[in-house]
Image (tube, rainbow, N blue to C red; front, side, top):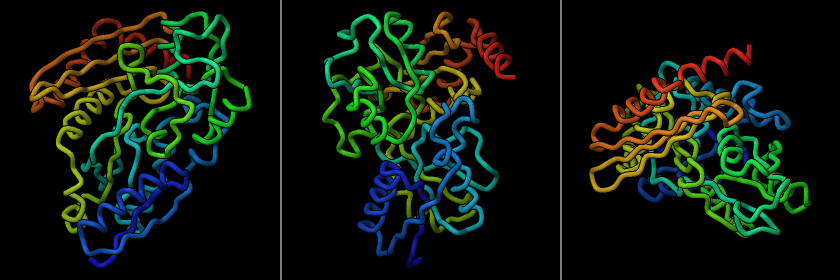
Amino acid sequence: MEKLVIGTRGSKLALWQANYIKSLIEEKHNISVELKIIKTTGDKILDTPLAKIGGKGLFVKEIEEELLNKNVDIAVHSMKDVPVELPNGLEVGVFPIREEPFDAFLSLKYNSLQELPEGAVVGTSSLRRKVQLIKKYPHLKIKDLRGNVDTRIRKLTEGQFDAIILAKAGLKRLGLLEHVKQTIDDSLMIPAVCQGTLGIEYREDDKKVQEIINFLNHEETVYRTKAERAFLKKLEGGCQVPLGCLAILDGNVLKVKGFLSDLKGEKFLYEEIEGDKSDAVKLGLQLAEKILSKGGKKIIEEIYAQGD
């Protein structure tokens, strides 16, 4: 194989991620790698919260069509944008080393969430972040914030928000840490499933490509991804359901923590579990089952009933 084509979105972050994988492949193999930029539905609709327009798959659907039509060989995704059900014939099975999974607090005037005064305006379009903020800091005012990373930071610097919350991984990758005042660890906010994780998607029957990219797989990231994705799959969580999950590997012990909430943050179910890393999928499923059995099933049914 002389040439490999990567399908990617055209956002700065997506291009950084695709170019990062391109450089690793070219360094390892004697192959030229090209990028093909594909505009997705999620890129075209910038003024509506994702939960209202169909959620995660909006950032990958068109790229997956190009993969299936053999116009590209692989796709590089942020795993938190990838639905748990993939189209027939495609697989996401290679996970490079994970970046920090936590959220970041950005502000011009304040140094931390704890410092924000009564009525301070915080920008985020994530239901997961909203419910966790409401629960811990009920005195804050939370407003929707959409757009790419640059747009969101611009809205902060223009004074539309007192603070905004973004994934730290993307900011690190783009060198945009200047307004980050606090890393919001999992004691304050559980991250999104697979936040900071990249996944490489390819055709299941394309063994040649799989041989080329296998070296990118990072063992610890694989275990953590399996547990978090199993949790998500069991809860059937799209963008309409506020939930989060984080798996941490300590030696051979995988610790998985997760939550599910109603839209107001009033019914908030948090659980954790640990076990051997080889049981990653089982641990993710068991954690989800614990939450479902304690009222999670009812919360999910109520949320989807409201959307009908």
